[in-house]
Amino acid sequence: MKSTIAMKKLPFACLFLLLVGCSPKETITEGEPKATEEKATASIALEGETLKLANLEIATATTSDSAEQLSVAGVLEADPAATAIVTSRVEGKIIRFTPNVGDTVDSGSVVAVIESEKLHEAQLNHALAVKRLEAAEMDLARRRNLAGLGAYGRPAVEDVRKQETETQAALERSKSEVRSSEAALAEAKSRLVSQAAIVDQARTAERLAASQVELAEKQVARSERLLTEQLISRQEHEQALAERAKTRATHEHSQAEIRAAKAKQGEVQASIESVFTRQDSAQKAVATASKQHAQAQQALTRGEAIYKGGYLTSREVAEAEAVVEQARISAEGALDDVQLLGGQPGDNHSIPIHVPFAGRVLERKATLGQTVMAGEAILTLVNPRILFAQLALFPSDLPRIRVGQQVMMKIQDRSFSGVVERMGEQADEKTRAVKVRVRVDNSAGHLRPGLPITATLGTANQRFVLVPAGAVQSQEGKNVVFVPAEKPGEFQARPVKVGITQEGKTEIRSGLKPGEKFVAKNAFLVKSQAMKSELGEE
Image (cartoon, rainbow, N blue to C red; front, side):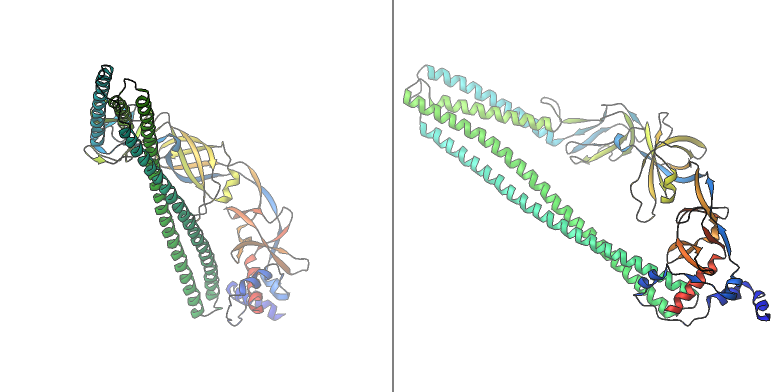
């Protein structure tokens, strides 16, 4: 009886050490996690004086309304569907560039003028092609008049046949180039498939390394806990740290391999695009050669008929007709080149750059006098009427948020509102937060993309089980509460999902139902007894 009274007078720290015990340190093996998982469902027994000294309080789980407001940070972003990157169609020098960042421009307005040597060359080629066509037509008319007067002798069919043979050879060369490009394309696609397999292998290795890092992190956390309680030696803890560093290095190496494999995959994709360009050029050459060969065949057929029939047509007229047709094809091709570069025949070699819609200049990517390449961006345009606020919420808060819900936001002392438009499908790998996009009406034009904001989301009333914060304990990386077992003095760890903690109360989202009994006070002593039992079994 005296010993019982003496134990009740012990300080709280001594009582804690008494319950934990002073078991000798033991070496923890790699096979231990499986055994630990099996013990997680076992009962934890507190008997005799230990149960009395623990002074546990058993309570019944109850529910309470939860009505709170979430305050999260975010940033304003432009509407991706209303953002345009204005580029130059040709290589050239910027000789006029009017808008500045923040300026508003109308739809279709000219924001820059590019002086292009390529366009100048294309216009010269077109002018020369038109002159050749006019000269060929005049020559054809002259030869027809001479033929009508009987100035030519019988046509030389062999010359026409030679031209047909040459065009046939040119056509075959073009077709051969198409076949060669198709073979190169097939080979590049095969390489792309192989590289994709390499990327998949690298990703598999990275996921394995990530799992090993996660396991090493758990081992280190457990080692730190046991070291704090003086259950393992410092050397054993350092071994766990070394193993974690090794797995992290392996993880970083696997990530580097993924980046290298993706870079190689990008090179293969670029080669495929190059082969596509080569194939397109070859197909155009085939089309041109086919037209020229068809014309040569027509000329041959006509020359043979004239030769056999003795008509007043001559070889010179047939040649002139073929020259006219070829000159016409060349003129049409030169015109296509000019229009493809954004110019028109007879204009100077300056190309105006128009914007696709009305908006505000978000960024200037070039300067006056700069030489830009074809396809290079010169400015970014955004429609400022609609913005989006990008917020990051933890998964535990997502059940309280819904699409269409109003959100109040603030920038310094300016307040405005928005509506939840979309909720992310997956959490960020590092922060574990889920992105929530809020649509903001910026018709007044006072807001700008990139500004940081503070958002307040009023959550709906919901009923949750509330327990004292101390009733929730962490065991093997999981949140648990201890519930009485069938036998008096025995308890079981019940995994639970928790919500927020306010004013000493923690929300239980799942795992504990209203009306169930649980350890509301001194639950950490039950956890300590569980740890003591675990070490004793080891």
